Length: 325
Image 1 (cartoon, helix red, strand yellow):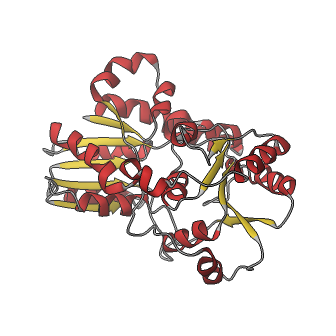
Image 2 (cartoon, rainbow, N blue to C red):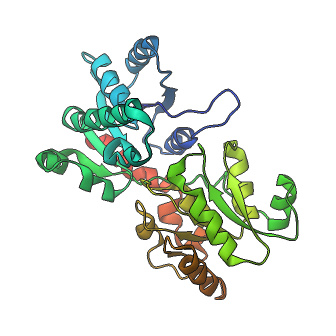
């Protein structure tokens, strides 16, 4: 089977940007049932639609990631080609919670249009994935029958060849950080208010001691494992998420995760002893974190959760969906 991945999420010329599509492509390449897989980033211009159409002629299936108007227009551009079309939604393209922090009517209109386009895409595409089961609750009930036939949960994963444990002291020195501090990792890739950095900063203040917030923003993907290995734990305080992959990345490196109730965070942390859901109240959150950190680390999630963290194994479910189509 030949698969073409398409997404409007890509890395820029400096190598900074969402790496999920590149890692998905690499994982699919390791599945013996896939003969060829490529990724074409959507360039947000008219010529990009024609480039994708020309490329799609060489494939059996086109899988678009992140819904919205652009994805709907690509479906239109592929009319007449004998290829199966799959789409996977990643968060605000379905639940549109970004409306809470949108600035101005133009941004709000854009978010609403992308959500409506995503709902229409559910009707048009051959199969529809959601990175978290919780996202399906935001789909209008009138589409429930269609979802029963087309919908599936596409869990994301971690590249175990990239995310390898590194000695904390080596990671700290690689990043040029101070040796005598404890670092709390906070991921804010695009520096948005949705991530609620203010809550994270207040929680760290309540922790006291030598804790410092290590903010991961505008970082090249190859540097991310160093940030996680240098930290003592991951802190997630977002107002909205779909299925935050940074949780999986932290767990793959045996790091504790403390997250507010958002997206599928609770599901990802279910059954763990050293990672829990925390309050949005900084004082209560700090108390919970301290009580957990006082316990010995017993989860060893890199090994115990390998089946649902390793992208190569997670992606086999997706290939099963491809073959059914």
